[in-house]
Amino acid sequence: MTIGGGGDDLDDFVLDDEYFAPSGDELDETEDTPSQEDRPVASSSSNIADDAQKTKKRKQREKNKERKAKRRKVIESAESEQPHSIAQRSPHELAEYMSAMQAKTFDKSTALELEDMRIPDTSIADTTSWTGPRTLDYLSDFIIKTIPNLHTRLSQKSKNPGSPTLLFITGAALRVADVTRILKDKRLRGDKGGEVAKLFARHFKLAEHCSYLKRTKVGAAVGTPGRIGKLLIETDALTISALSHIMLDISFRDAKKRNLLDIPETRDEVFRTVLGGPKISEAISSGKIQLVLF
Image (cartoon, rainbow, N blue to C red; front, side, top):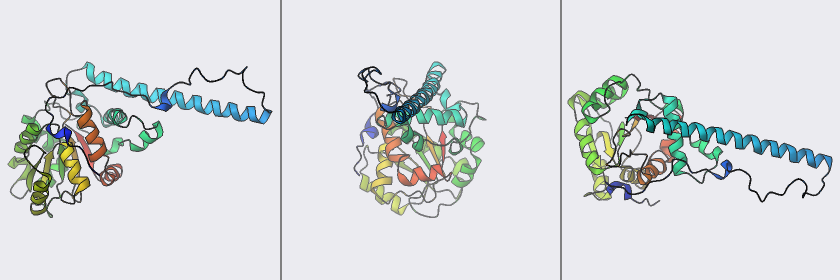
């Protein structure tokens, strides 16, 4: 599978779109549907079957509209408040938010297909206890207080090369470098913790990262979704054997006030190549990997 790395090098994006693109299941019946008077007279059993089918379709449309309205409410509520507030929500609300963003990436999918992709509430970390700013100055404290099991794992010696316990996904190369410096904090890694890998396309070829990961025991890997997606899908250099957490850098916004999932390129890479990879998707659904929105 070949993945475009556009999201890795884009610091200033110009694309924008609506939060929701309704699928075919969410559209009302068209006006071309023949009226009752124009239809041929059918047998009683046929009429009953037709009525049942109509009722089923109507209920499905109502259900889809209700789900769409709920997703829209989450997005609009997040936008109306202070920036970054969405990451402070409960796991259930964050699951709704992630589902809404997923629907934008997979806009041709049916409601049933989207429901199958949904990240369960139980696989999203509850970080509501953190009331401080969600900025890099507080990232170490955030991890220590809200995700103590991740803190413990980061301070332990890595067993195998290229097998981090944390993947930190962010949208810009410069941001990767900043996050990498923070995750090297001795309060997180102690004296035994593994290295922190810096993974983005700008200035680094894929082969260089493969070589680095195959010889280095890393506790955390920070990168753009395009480069991390390629490493996960196209190579065996980055493995998920020790992966326990994936952190999405939702709080950081670009010059146009857009976060990681507001930007079409990076959003699609997150859902298609990182969270959408078969192994990671299965591990998230089963609870082996927890999603953290920072």
